Length: 279
Image 1 (cartoon, rainbow, N blue to C red):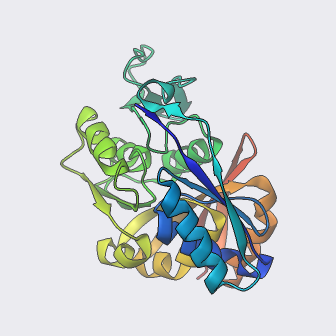
Image 2 (image 1 turned 45 degrees about the vertical axis):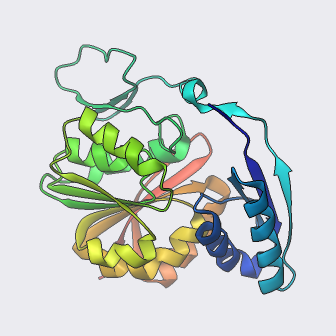
């Protein structure tokens, strides 16, 4: 099915970027990119809704302005397969369903079809999160995945031995895809996907020994208090969804909030970290 998407482009004061980004996520239920500080991007299939959101943000945030731009129509029924190939992350082997995995008896295989949901293993932020998850998850851990998209991290966690994995996603089109992927990997008994705001559901779904938050720097910053309350004592958090230049912005935020970075991965310009609360 060919769908026309409308991009919402917002410019705001740099000091307001986190709050405006959160408002944009809440309004559209889609991920938000920040190519430059104070420049926010999201997209939606409803043009009228896009214009309404731009007007509302301009009215409620001083110095905020925006525009709506039509994007090229995309046939997601076939386009989402473009360029997807198997990937290896330590013991973890991620492969699409239409490609037979390499013959490796020691590999832990995850078969995934992202369709229109975010999370295929072709994005550097997802690969960084998967690499950190493979390194730090222990068998029997409980896992929360904020912004679960295709279900890739929650499913990988279950395949790696997690006792339970709960994904939380605001996009109502993603969870059916994630549930189909969980069934494909025979982990439906341990993986659950919830529709809603991670800030509201995260603590209720916890505690967890591992929390994955592969979203955006601005949203990761806003979710820090919730993540702290949802994390089990001694647990670890994997933050991703941030480009390498954002390290200088997010690292001090973590440190001021009492977190210590214990591991990090850089992949194709993206930066992911594993952090624990300072003792």
